[in-house]
Image (cartoon, rainbow, N blue to C red; front, side, top):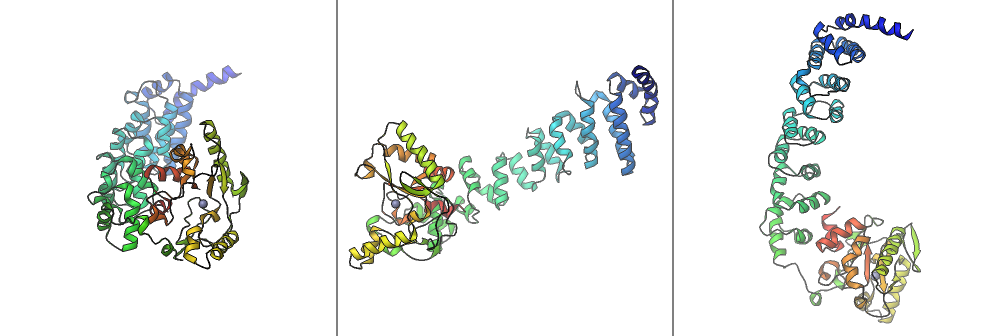
Length: 435
Ligand SMILES: [Zn+2]
């Protein structure tokens, strides 16, 4: 029964294909390739869509192209091509485009093009494909501003970085101005917040990425021009030595910390927490309360210290609530006969201690200055890989407002900590250039 059916079917085949406007020669080619059923199905659907679109010309061209196998690579999968060619025509690609694409691009990748509208600058896409960009990138490049795609394709600017910078808000001219930065510096810029003045700073002679936060802080404080700030900071004129700092005078209620639960929340002498702020995910570690992720990271850090053979350390203080800090401050105030300045040198006002975030940790080592701990250098070199930074380093007092505290570490998450460690930035500096 099946055999009869099959032979009957085969008798009908040539006629049916011819009814779809294939020539005898084409029908022979189709049969030779064993694609009879596929072509009947495809022919039917192409005629259908041709009828629907009232554009049989396009479809006929496609069919001719498909079966003139001289243009196609060996071992061509006709069915797969068919599934791509028709939609590409539908999207508005020309015959030459389709031919080029089928010959140079993997079928799986071509599927991506069939799912998207014709790119804005089709020629850019083909140039990009010639330059060995993958289809997704070539397609995206073809939808970019032409100047921007030229910057990438012809001038060799990194694709991902350039697109990210542009999406951030930097113009083609801005990106050109910043092209003197190293690729890792440019990647860093893609992570930072948009800074309108940055291209101008980068253009200034002597620009140093590691000083960028200081340029920004100085510019904001002094209201100077970007290039002036670069020159000022390069000459270290923003630096104030510890002995010349008025640590007490740095207290003011300029800013409330806007994102207190963020791992990079800035709490310092001019960024304060509300009295009702308390983290919601406090947990206990080493008999102290801290936020859950901090406890987990600290567990890994302690294990690593142990594996390195360093002495054990413990957590002295982690979370301090607003009320506890208020009590602590008042105790010092009493001790110093209401001398606020003296009390403040010991502990901050309530709301101004980052211990209230549940992200700060003071370590303790056998009653000595923590910098004498035998794992201290290892900690300075590696704590960032666990998400911790030394919060108050030496010589950064003019930025942090706090004297060097060797045992006070702050959890900020691994990514932020790594950026701060690698650039030797404090949280104040990091915050000046990140959201
Ligand atoms: Zn502390």
